[in-house]
Structures are given as structure tokens and as C-alpha cells.
Length: 475
Image 1 (cartoon, rainbow, N blue to C red):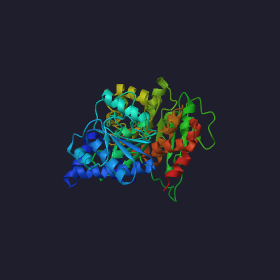
Image 2 (image 1 turned 120 degrees about the vertical axis):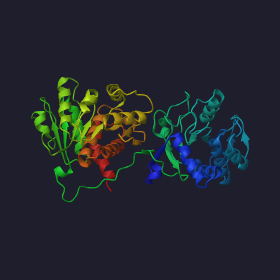
Image 3 (image 1 turned 90 degrees about the vertical axis):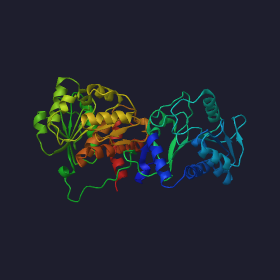
Image 4 (image 1 turned 90 degrees about the horizontal axis):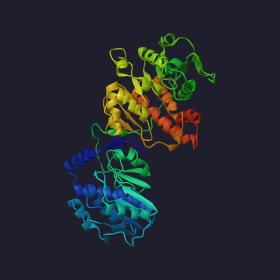
């Protein structure tokens, strides 16, 4: 998933999608033509999936239902046996026209309907209220009696902007066909976990300024012919009370492209460090004075006591491109970022939900709204790129740019995978010196490594798989 054409990688809110459609209409494409384009495009997906099996199309009263009538006629023209169920008549001009062009029969209830494939066109991306009891019962009953289920645009009962499920007990879908552009619900929990495979039906929507983007496979290149370890990027990982987490991050960083990785260890040292990893034991301020560092990582296993806080402050005072993760996020306070101390020192913050809530309290943020909105608020308050981690990770920049990632592998729900991600981000930051680009590349590598590692992997397995993921991204 993830089209290379930039206009097909955008993720739109309901308002942005409506504006985009109005732009198409203003350019001479009427609503009927758009509905035909969307319905026929979705219909071709349904035809392929149905593979000759009987199809039920559930149509609502609005334009999503109109899409359903177009799909049904397209299938009938292709020789597919199709039955339309429409509990309410069309209420928009475009839907009325689509209904008039459908030559087949329409049933008001699902009684006696037997098919192999269900296509949900009851409501689309504009729904902002729960389904009423009769419609919910109809939807769930039809879903229970159809072994394969396809949702068109956004599954009925889902809030398109937030990914919230507006009703309890909504069906799961095997395939969801986004019309015109991706919507935020396609990548936001909990709804995205119910949507199955995602496919996009292109209807000619142009680029929308300010739209979020879907995380894409990065295009990486081998080091330059004259590269050496410092040109490729020297990364310093600041260890703390629990050095194992720093070692895990370093294992990923060694495979993420940096030319040289050093761990700046606390007094306890770093037991089990591999020979290719340099461990320094000098005073932290002495180590950080090395101007060859391209980037720093602080947080994994740092601890949360006064000594840990002092190590964080020393890192910030070094004014290097820095990734702040784990314990360091809990210790981070706005006063540490004030003044000109950090001028020219890009930062990436990598909180999970719990750490995000702490940061929002520390920075005086409300914590309200969708994850992408919260991530942008923190990015602007901290002046840093924010990667809000989870099954539906979001990257936000201080400029308000947002990237959403496809739903992550559930096998990542094991201790230490966040340390691996932090190491990958820091490695890419050492290579790129660009915090947004580093965050994007590392998040993709992390997700790809999870696929390469297979089921039931450990965080150590995942760290070692980063190298294989990087290989997949080489141009």
C-alpha cells in the first residue's frame, strides 16, 4: 500500500474532501460524473474480489448509497448476480439519478437475502452520529450472513476524522475501498483495525494544501564512494541506570545506516556490548565535548532520578541534533528548552501514549482531540518533530505537517520495541541531520523490520532485522 504519486498519498478530513470534490465540480466535472467514476472504480474491485460469487450491495439514502447503485449496475453489466438492499429511498439528487439508472430490483430489508459478498454503502465519510437501532441491526445481520465483506469509503458507523466507532458491535471488514483520497479513519485506531486490506479508488482529486500524508517507503542510497565512519554519521547514545535499553537501541542504530555508534555509559558500564560498539566511560560532559557527534539519543534506560535529569540537561546543553525517548520524555520540561541553548539543534520526541500525557501536562497542553492534533500541538510547543507511537503512529512537525502510518504489526506489542525505534530514529538522524526525514525513514524501517522478523519476535530480533528493512529501501 502507499501510492508513489503524491496526490494519492494525501489523507483528508471530511471538510478537505468536500472542498476537493467542489474543486473538481468547479473545473467542470459534475456530481453525477464523479459518482459514476467512484462507483465504477469501486465496482471493478468488487467484481475482482467476488470472482463470480453473488453480491449484496447495502445502499443508504445519501451519496454513498448513490455510489452503491452505481456499483450494483456495474456488477450487473459485468454479469455478476447482484441484489441491492436499501432501507430508505435516495434523498440527494445524485443518488436519485444513480438509483434511476440501476435496472435491478431493490429490497427494503435483508430478509431472505443470501450472497457471498456484502458491499457496505450505507453511510460514508460524512457520518458523525451513531447508526439508529434498525440500521445497526440490518448492517450487523447482513454482515453475519456474508462470508466476505467490503466497506466503501469508510465503514458505516465510523467517524472519518477520528477513527472512532460510533456504535458498539460494528462488523469487521475484509476490504475497505477509499474513494478519491484516504481518510484519517483508515489509519486511526480503533476503526482501522476493523477495515481489513485498504485500497484507493482514484477519482482525480488534486493535491490539497495542508493535507496529511501516508508514510511512504523511503528511497535510500548506499554511502558515497568516499564515505567514512564520520561522514556517515557518529551517533552517541547516552546510557543510564538500565543499560540494557541503551544496548538494544544501539543494536538497531548499528544497522540503521550510521557510520559509527558509541554508547556514553554511566558508571555501571555496558555489560554484553558487542565488539563493534564503542563504549565510553568518561564523564558525560567530557564525552559530549566531542564535536564529531552528528546526533545524540537520550532516554532508553536513563532512569528518572536527579542523576538522570542531570544527564538529560547535559545532552541538551551540547546543542546537537537529538532524539529524546522513554525516561527522558518524562523528565523533559519546557524550561529546559527555553533561550537560545537549543538554537540550531533539531530534536525528535518519540512518546507513546502514556509519555504523551505526561508531556502534555508538563507543557500545559489540553490533550484533547485526535492524535494528530495532539502531536502537532506538542511539536509546536516543544519546537521539535514529534513521533506519537502506537499501532496508529503519527509524525508531526512544528510547521503543522502530519504523516500517518499504516497500522503497525500487532507483534510489536513486546517490551523493548520502542528502544529499537529510538535507535533507528537516532541512526537516521546521524545520517540525515534532518529530524522529520529521520523520523519518517525510521518509522518505515521499524514497521518493515517487524514484517521481516516474523511472528513472536523479541525486541532483539527486531533490532537485528532493521538492516534487512534498510536493504528493502535501497534505491
